[in-house]
Length: 331
Ligand code: NAP
Image 1: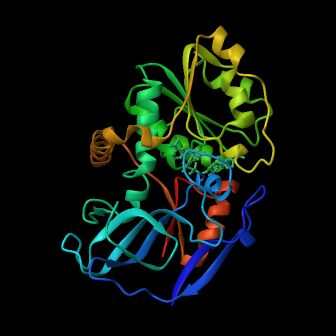
Image 2: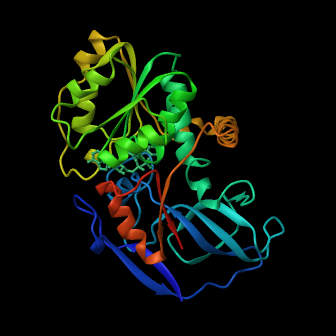
């Protein structure tokens, strides 16, 4: 059989199991222009939460009762196409189905001899490119500057911090457990880190570990954590708004301190982005990330959860901080 995960209902607030349904379908036959793909790895991403709602965004909402899809790695197990052969591994946006057909549009071959297949969903994929372009294109880090990263022990955040160190900056992370704080310093080379769950005053705790203030804030979480960072922004600081997971499950528009006074007083820049803005430069970013990885300047963590049926729970777990680095399902 061919297990398939559909969007059963739109989450209200925090996603739950009833929002998803696993169906058993037949394994499809391929036509003369198609190949059959077997799912191997699934990328779990916080932005999928937005696609599960029906509010307008930069990508279309998932349809109710239709399969959910995300970045995946699959193996070609039968092919009628000249460009893909049995045994090839491909990356692309695929349905959460054990088996699916494809004509190959939008699929990229990936090479398991260069890097583990899962890395193409993380450091060598959209995650790495998000960290690289957000930081270098909007943050434009200068040697000696201080970078603060929220969601620092996650997939994007852990790479941002390391790039900041490669570029000669003082890097401070914000994460949700003491274990993650320790990991940021021991494995990813952050100069310091704070635990937002035990901090009683993020503004003051951050000020203590950023003696020269904050020049660049790479924000993955938004909300109250960011309120504490804005108060430390230096003149001509840059605030890179990558994600705001802390408010993705809110059912009303969250309010907080207004940002305008910080921006005006400090002549600071605040810019949101989506990684797709830099699609023309992806080859440059990919080359740089691969080189740093090969030279041992970058490392990465993955939380790999096994089994197709685990896909919904692992997605929900993103909102409880269960992952260190990239959250991936291995089928
Ligand atoms: P991730 O950071 O690996 O996973 C989510 C992490 O967010 C969790 O491990 C958790 O870590 C933290 N978190 C969850 N709920 C939180 C809350 N209420 N407050 C503070 N932290 C919370 O995910 P990712 O894939 O690297 O993505 C990071 C952010 O970037 C997300 O907001 C995502 O939507 C965004 N993103 C944007 C783009 C773009 O193109 N702009 C591309 C990729 C990702 P703790 O244990 O530290 O809480």
